[in-house]
Amino acid sequence: MTSQETPRPTEAEGEDASKDRQFVTALARGLSILRAFRPGEVALGNQELAERTGLPKPTVSRLTNTLRELGYLVDHGRMGSYSLGPGVLALGYAMLAGLEIRERARPMLQALANEASCSVALGARDRLSVVYLDCFKGPATVTLSLEAGSRIPLATTAMGRAILAVLPAGERDYLMRAVRERTPDEFPAIEKGVTAAIREIESQGFCTSFGDWKGDVNAVGVPVVAPDGQRIYGLNCGGPSFSTPVEKLMERHGPRLVEIGRELGTPGATVGRG
Image (cartoon, rainbow, N blue to C red; front, side):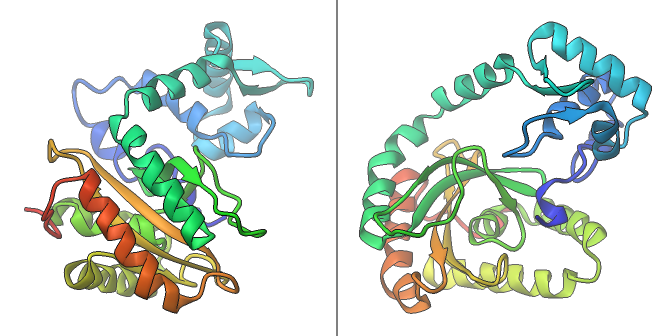
């Protein structure tokens, strides 16, 4: 897992937000505890949470106790450790239920997954990551082990690059600076990939990530700007490189993903708006 996938809550947006007089630091710290849990993890202790959030352990202890009392964390069998509680799931389902685009996208994305025999997903940016809102599998025997709720990096994946391409230029530059701070050695290659993705979106409507996120994964991505012009989503279609050849993605699946994006979002959404 790359460092981009699990940024500390103070990064990318939190530091600037903390300067806002309306910003409630205690609430932000509590949410950072919930953000620290990763898919597939059963439980975390206060020491692990302190390391991931950068918060003092006594602060973490008070926060976990409060979150447990509210139902967002539950005690785990391992002494002094916690799992996410039902309260978190309720919030997630409430959020998904309010996404009209998710319901409209489902039949089209499942049809493409069946046709392409790969994974097709809808996602949205969360700081330096993209969170899957829905994911569909084709009939292939081997697909990517991703599902709704999974996180992928923003700047090296096809979906993430597609979202970056249509962000206002100032916002995109700000996020790229945050990526550079986290991954200075890899940044020249990352920046090159994002720049290429912007050109691809301009010229063909979709961008690519062929081995850039993981060496054995190929994917194409398309941005979707909601009709209100404010919310930005991403679509992708991809899979293991041995079963998802570049040629099919470029010639068939990428153009089809563009068509789906146009049906879901604002026609003619421009790159680097503003």
